[in-house]
Image (cartoon, rainbow, N blue to C red):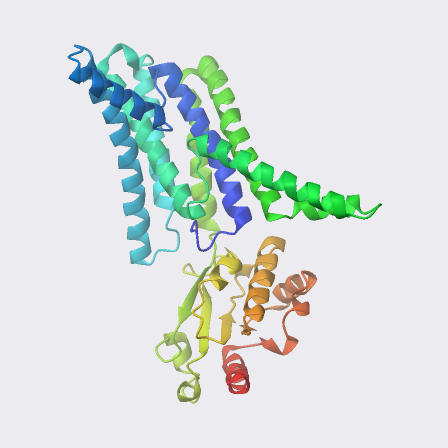
Length: 395
C-alpha cells in the first residue's frame, strides 16, 4: 500500500521522483494554455495579496484578480482536503491501499481537464472556462502534493521546487563538509573505498533525491511544452496513463502492513494458543504482516520505520511473516536496520513463518550477523514459546 509507514526510503524516493514530472508537465501546460501556474501557490498568494491591496486603493480591476487568485488558492487547498478525507477514510475502513483513491481522483481530474481543453483549447479567452480548467488542475495538484506529503512523512513535496532547491543547498554543504573531512583523514589508496561509502551516506542519498526531484520536475516541464505544441490537449494523456499505472501496480501488488495482534483475541491464533495465552508475558509484543487480498503477493514494508514505533515496554517482539511477502535487497536491508536498532536497545526480535526463499534472501543480506538463528522459528506457537524463555531471561 502507498503509506508512510509501509514505504521504505527508496520506495518513497521513486514515487516522489515519478510524480514530480507529472507536476511539472501539468503546470507548464496550464501556464501555456491559461497563463497561470497551478502546481504551487506562492506566486498566486502574492497576486492575491497584491489584488487585495489594489481593492483598498480602489483599483477597478483588482476585485476580479482577487477572486481568481483566491479561487486558485482555494482549489489547491480543496485538493489537499480531499486527499486527507480519502486517505483517512480508507484507513478507518481498514482498506489495504489507502492512497489508490487520491491517485485515481487525480487521474480523473486530469481526464476532465483534457476534455474541457479539447473543446476550449484557449481557456483564457473566456472567464468561465478559465475558472474550470484552472480549478481542475489546481485541485489535482493539491491532491498530489498532499498525498506524497503523507506518504513521505512530510519529507518531500512534488508540485513545487522552492523548498527542494533550498534543501539541496543545505544538504549539499553538509555533504561537501563531510567529504572534505573524510578526505583529509583518509589514508592513501583508500579514496575509492571512501567514494563507495559516501554513496550510502544518508546526506548523499538525500542530495540525490532532491536533485532527482528537481530534475524530474524540469524534465516534465520540457516534455509538457513539446507535447502541448505537437499534440494539443491530448498531451495530458501521458500523466493520466502514468497515474493509472501507479494505481494498478499498487492494487495488484501492494505493500504488506505490519500490524500488532493480540493472541488472546486474534481469530487465527485462538484455536492453537489456548495453553499459552495465560503464560504470555506483558513484555512480549506480536506483529503480523497483514495481507488483505487472498493469494496476492505483497512487497515487504519499511521495517526500519516500524521498529521506531514499537512500544518501549516490549523487550521481545515476534514478527509473523507471510509466505506471500516478497523480500528484496531493499526490504532485507530495512529489516537488518530494524534488528540492529532493537538490539542496541536490548530487545530481541523473533521471526516466525518464513519460507526458504525468504530466509535465504535475509541471510544473503547479513541478517545472521545481528540476530540469533534460534530466533527464526517455523510457526507462531514456537515463536511464543521462544519469547517466553527470552522474556524470563531478560526479566
